[in-house]
Amino acid sequence: MTDRNTIILQGFSMALQCEAEAHEDLYPGMLLQERSDGKLQKHGDEGGIAERLIAYEDELQGKTMEEKYDSGERVLAARLVPGSKAQLMIKADEEIAIGDELISAGDGTFIEDTSAGTGVTVDQVVAIAVEACDLTATSASNTLCAARIL
Figure 1: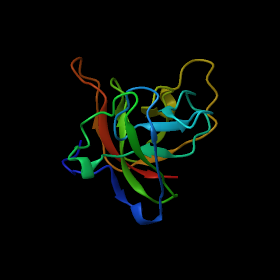
Figure 2: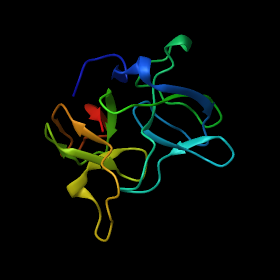
Figure 3: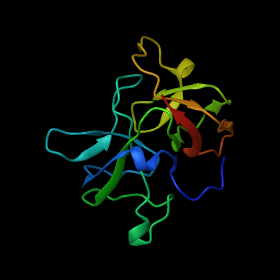
């Protein structure tokens, strides 16, 4: 786990930034997808194809990367390019090692590709972990962990 105070660690200037209304509560570091009505929601396909669209903190409104966006609020997000580094929201109960391949967990968070559910076909690895993150403790919750976008 990290003490950095921003979601996008490298590559922000090359990212395609967007702002849209949240369809549901969202946290910085989550993998998002755009709905047909233009609103943003959690990426909902475990192991599925994703745009690498990541929510980041709204520092202009005085918000930190730990503060969620409420449903209906404007969300700041970026489509990150390969090679960018970002803090991604890792699902509780995961044990991530440096070099692990990360996929969508289907709920906006990320899991190691070997954690995909039975019968799930992994269509896309989104990132590679660049720091270790052990969330296997019983009290662990979803946590940010640095990764390189593929």
